[in-house]
Length: 135
Image 1 (spheres, rainbow, N blue to C red):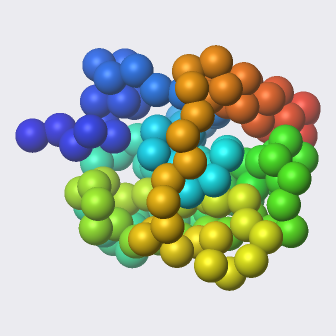
Image 2: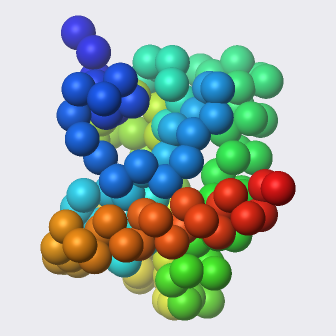
């Protein structure tokens, strides 16, 4: 059975898409820890992040690196935190979260509530910075 992320990638479930490559996909988390919280996933359905082949592992991390730079330009923060947890969805993924203190990356924190217009605007702004940075 396809994971929720596979359904998002295929367009079966809508998302706030930010960017994609031939093998990777990035979109906003709909229950974000902070404004701009991104999920970066491989298009192939692999449960454990560390089961990715070496080339794919490097590719998704380089994709996440460029997205983190774009995210930091859109959402003011001290750093962009990165977490690979993988318990909440059985599909490998990276969380990129704007942070100003270490506790901002605590997944027990209350989630930020943003409306559709805010999510759409944030996704578009990060996408624009990403496109500008990759040209």
